[in-house]
Image (cartoon, rainbow, N blue to C red; front, top):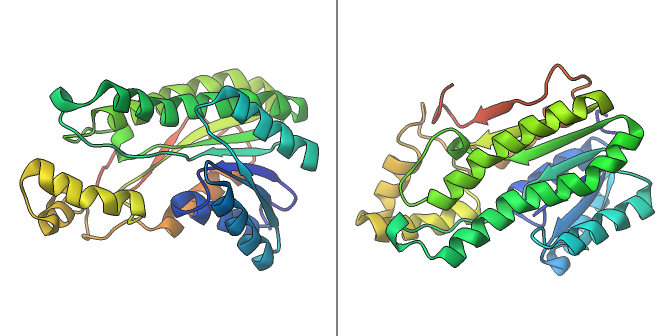
Length: 260
């Protein structure tokens, strides 16, 4: 098992991509803290994954935009299991508007969850990783870390920002055995993406079918959605890679939606 005994914190992991990564890590023997703003859902997912084994999971409440909540959550994991080996900063939402119509409050909310959340969780975990002289930080970026799309000014800005943050952490953390990398998925059919389909259809004045076929999948090589399992495999690669040879990198998993 590639992660046997490793202590992992995954934000926004009560469902969607985060839950898929948590499941993959538990299968590899990890101890996984599912940190989510929805405590009930986090505990339910943790119980489900622990029953599957061979690793185990716990659920805890965490608002990643609140420094005290982040610090308290990380401290609770350390108190229970003795440290932190892997952080997956996955919590995120989507809000779409044309730029001239984008409410400033929504802009700030988007950047707070995606960027502040990655910063605060990394800041809280790094001292424990440095103490072990080992650690892996993984940010959930997007194809929009590389390329822009209409209606997504805040999302694109945040996802681009994660690349810079990961690169700084990789340089600062190298002397302490800590790596930082970014996963950049294409469109994964989670509730987050399904919610966008009617929203984009309304904003762009096209049908929902056209949103899926032209905007979401039109640039792929096979007109297929990326799967949660695809993304979880990349997370496992970044989490288990043994050296600094793989740090400060971003890996696109998008069925060719974006090619570097």
